[in-house]
Length: 122
Image 1 (tube, rainbow, N blue to C red):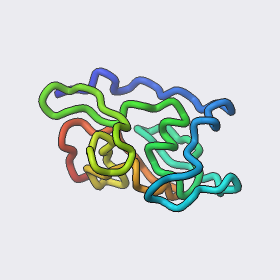
Image 2 (tube, helix red, strand yellow):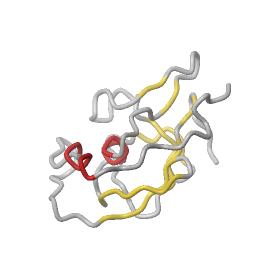
Image 3 (tube, one colour):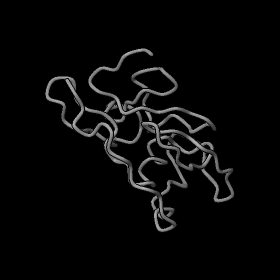
């Protein structure tokens, strides 16, 4: 199954998108405004994120809302429950497939890939 979105560039973050960032989370500790900015890579594109914020929140804040495709029909999925239960936010992170990005904190240098289907170890 090929990804029709492969090779397309991701939208660049804007200052207005900081309004979309999560500052309080029911599972992760409260995320203060004075956080360290780090660089992560999503599908080959480097973006800025706040260290410790959920990966899915960092992607959402930069306009990336499609995180994986379903195995059978290739339908796009994104954040649904936001607490790690539904698995719609699974992506491949640092070569590890099926990482629940809504509850996994960002760390500097992370390499994140949109996951097609069930994911594969790299």
